[in-house]
Figure 1 (cartoon, rainbow, N blue to C red):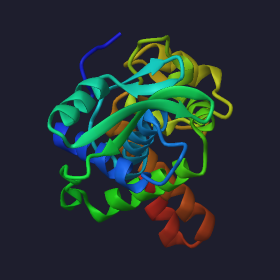
Figure 2: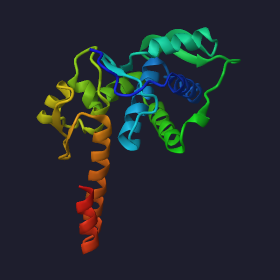
Figure 3: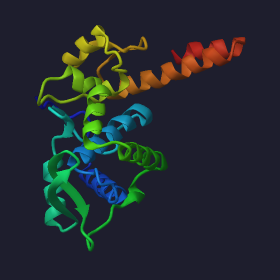
Length: 229
């Protein structure tokens, strides 16, 4: 089910994240399209969670083996036609899949368009993926994505689901995710409308409030705590 996209899709950024990940993991024998798709997903959803907006704005759907960007095949094929990448179908650990490699004479990712915070987040996600096989990465995307757990195959995973801790996924959050736009509750007590921007602001305010209330007890901290709620 593909509805109206939550964010504008930035094609250039999406392709450059693909190129950057392929370059960084060129020496990873377990790197394949499974891992590349999960890097794109976690980079966007972690960016929404911590920075307030995704890196590429891609729309992701629930597939059997985890979240995937709807436009991934189109972007990959465009890079292939441009001679930027090579795609080889081969055995990766325990199953056959396509592997994306940079063409020796192809273009490289333009990382100047990303902020320092985005670069740091991308690097962290890529290095986290390096530690796992494709099967492990796929399993992690199931366990760590509240949106994937709540949606049916083919349905869009909302960015707002990045703010929900799926371990465990409580009934209220599950019901909210199954009804886009409805009010739902996070496991940490947050309750918000399924709007990515408002949800991110609420999450940041709640985090600040909690941090201040636990570390300061004077009257000034109490006043500031009240203002952030």
